[in-house]
Image (cartoon, rainbow, N blue to C red; front, side, top):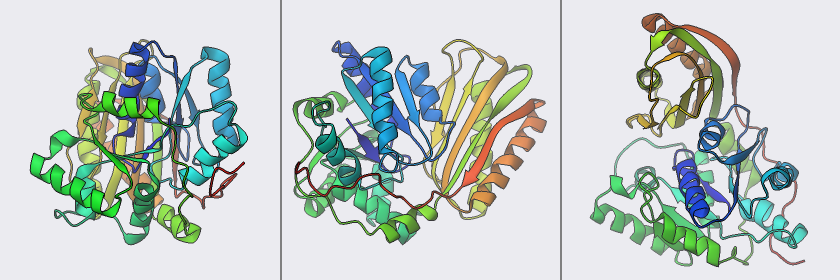
Length: 363
């Protein structure tokens, strides 16, 4: 099962709920996360929930196809999962031609490929479609977004609790008009509403067999190059401190700093984890104008813990790095905490070069 969608759509939360539902059905599950770099909040979160998880870094699934297959073999060797759920990079598209069809063509005796799902943040999409006002991305970034919608078998409108019934109906009507051949489903991953019905469709069907879409890889590469990637991790230590409050404060400082520079956030994710035990705090921010949401909270204060920050935004990587570095320094000073940096990386994704690209499933 491949669950795609743009940055901030809620893919990881959806994958987590699907995984839990599959376990309840007695089915073993392996999860595969994906990013342009190492140090993912998603991987830490999924592992903290007890899921066997492999992380593929250094490029999207299309460019790391052999690593995707190897990850599934690693999980098979260790845990023997019946079902793999793969979450591609949020700026990735052309998954049908570069992942689904190669899996079917080369490894068809090993895998059944479920319909390709693309998860949608309805507020962001309503802004993109002009159904409501608000800042969005440049045309080159939106090229990737539109291609994700175009290639999906199932368009999954997430976060339905954030819209009124009228707003949801309007959005769904536009999607049906533009993509009449696609299935459209509504979910709210954070509460689990609608996810089981979506899962039933994934379990009962296979990926569509029609030809893959046309993709201008120059336009695709330009769109990815507009996005800045910033991954930071380090150890935070001090007298007993509130890790939940620390994440919330950091998110507010980062948002305000980026807002003053007119940089649109695609996704900001953060976790704070103690050295031992499953306890963690995790939260995310999916737009510069949005409110930071703390989805998991630490039960107790900390003396030290590992902080991971993943920021994706339409801005220069050096600017994102300067923002994160300055915010962390200011926050540590204000909170009387010490910080040791373990990993710091800021960059723009390179040009996508698929390992394989098949336009259909012909053997």
